[in-house]
Each structure stands twice: as C-alpha cells, then as structure tokens.
Image (cartoon, rainbow, N blue to C red; front, side, top):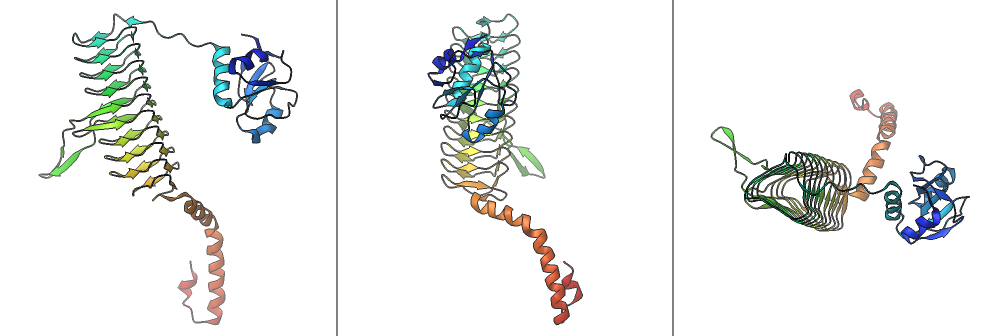
Amino acid sequence: MTVTVQQLADLVQGNLFGDRDVAIHSACGLEEAQVGDITLLADPQNVSRLQESKAVAAVVPVLLPTCGKALIQVADPLFAFAAIVQHLRGIKPPPPEGIDARAVIAPSAQVGERASIQPFVLIGENTVIGKRCRLAPGVRIGANCRLGDDVVIHANAVIQADTLIGDRVIVHANTVIGADGFGYRFTRGQQRKIPQLGTVVLGDDVEIGAGTKIDRGTFGPTTIAAGTKIGSLVQIAHNCQIGEHNLLAAQVGIAGSCATGENAVMGGQAGVKDHIQIGAGAVLEPGSGVIENIPARSRVSLYPSRDHADADEIVAGLKELPQMRRNLRRALKRLKGEFAIPAEACEA
C-alpha cells in the first residue's frame, strides 16, 4: 500500500510539518527504515538517530527540526505509530465463526453466538463460552468453566476445570490456568499432597503471555484482577490475589498466598516469597528478591530487596571494592613496618 504522509496524519489526527505529499510505502524502526518508510521517534533525546535514519517521515511527540523529513506530531506517538502500521500492513482477518467439525464439545457445554471454535479444541461438561470468543487449535477447556465475551485463547493453552474468566481476556499459547498448586505436608515420613480444591478467577481485560502458569487455590480462588497484564513464563502460585492493572514481566515468580495492590509493577525475573504483601503502585526492579512486605509506591531491587536508591549505592560501592582491597593491603604492609602486626593480617 502506498499513501501520502498527509493521509497518515489525518488517520491519527496529528499535526503535520514538512512536505505533505511525501509517499509512504511502509513503516519500520529507526535503524531498519528505508527510503519511502515512516518511522517512530518516541523519545526526543534520540533525535540524532532520526537524523541518521533513511526514513522520509516520522511520528514524533514534540516539534523537532524537520531534518529533511516530514513529521507527524501527536500526543501519544506509540499508539499513533501502531495505528499507522496496522493501516499499512492491513489487519489480519479473524478466524471463521462457528464450530469446526474436529472440535470436541461436551453435550452440556454452551457456546455463545459468533464464537470461533477451531480444530481439535476440547470443551468440558457444563462449561459456558461467551459471545465472539476465539479458541485456537488445540485449546483445552475443562468442565464447569465460564468464559466471558470476546475472550481469545491461543493455541494449546489449557484452562482447567472450574476456572472463571471475564470479558476481553487474552491467553497466549501453551499457558496453563488452574493447575494444582504446589501444596504438600511432610507427615508419616513422606511428602503428602494437599488436595487443591479451589479455582482461578481472571478479571476483565486481563492478558497472559505464553508459557505462563497460574495455579488454582487450595480451597478458595487464585485471583487476577481486571486490567492486569502478565508476561511469558510467569509462575503465580496458589491463593495469590493480584490486584488491578498490575504489570508482571517475563519470568516473574510469585509464591503462594501473596497479594498485590493496584498498579504494581514487577520487572523480569523478580521473585516474591510466600505470604508477602506488595503495596499499590510498588515497583520491583528486574531480578528483585522480595522476602518481606513492600509498602505502597516503593521501588525496590536486589536480593534481599531494598530501597532502589540504597541498592544503587551498594552496586556502586561493589565496583570500588577491588581497589579498596588493594589500598587496604598496601596500608597494612606499611603499618607492619611500624607496629608488630602478624604477617597473616596483611594477607587479605
């Protein structure tokens, strides 16, 4: 598709500066862009990269020197650029509505109107699938589940029995919702399994990445509240209560019976000990190891986790340790000549 930059500015309701008739063939990143492409500059501090780019136009957040390029100024460049990319590449058509003959659906299950049930989907007894849901090939939905409207479950995901899912939820490939929690008690000389009899509840507009696992509660629900987004390869253990609009990046691990407030953020590979409370708006930097409660709006890092400002000072100090060690050894050697210090004390 070929359009003018003016047409794209109209599409995103942006202010256009520069040649309005520049022809745009594609949209790419700053480094990948070629002549005829439009690109994105989300951070004005990277203006030098824009100047070096071969792109003929860019979506920007503020007015910049045109540097020979047409600029579309918008309040939110990322979403505007996404709309442009979709327009130029075309939106993929949804899968066909209806139930594929190769799907297996229990007689007591209910499938809402305009749903798309693709090959080799399995839906258990007494499960209800909402309107316009899309279940990709190989999806498994257990018995007594409830899926709201406009839910999308990608290929080979497994939704175990008794799971409740709200509207507009997205579950990516190979994720497992509602597996047994890791509950055992050592008794009579062996680890004995504690039956995991609870459920999982996903609120509206939750999105869960690929290969993630959310365990059912022991007796009550494990809950992911509305609007929360969970990355790939995340583990959320039984009985956790994850608040609204949280962001959990890839490989986060949360042990059992933890709770988070709204708008909490966890960076990649952050780990949380069981029975921990994470306050609203708290930020766990990547790799944080949390072993005690985190107050609201705190920012922590390292293991054991501590205030991020303190952590920065500790990391900076670690870089100085080798030189400090050398200085200490030299000082001890000097002192040895003046005082009766054992030789082994100078061997650090």
